[in-house]
Length: 86
Image 1: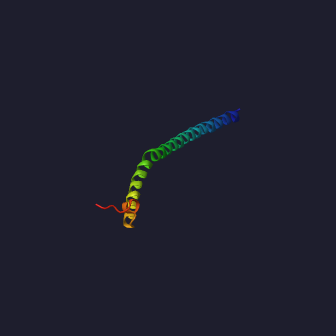
Image 2 (image 1 turned 45 degrees about the horizontal axis):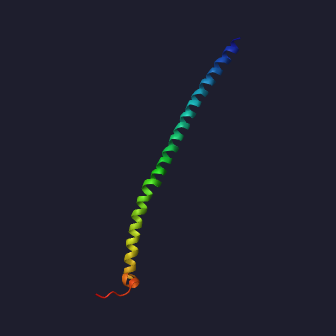
């Protein structure tokens, strides 16, 4: 009989260790889920807020550069509208 009592003690020790492991696994899973949600929020912030402002900024920069280049090459108003005399 003492062998059976000892085996029950080892079984209870093993089951208590697995319960701690399952708690750790649950915590890890929740931490991973929160991390994924945070990454998704950052992606949405970038695509909805920052990307349009960057596009607006660089679009205006490029249009200013393109217009200056056309004027420098002689493709300004006189090229498209002809000579205007005062």
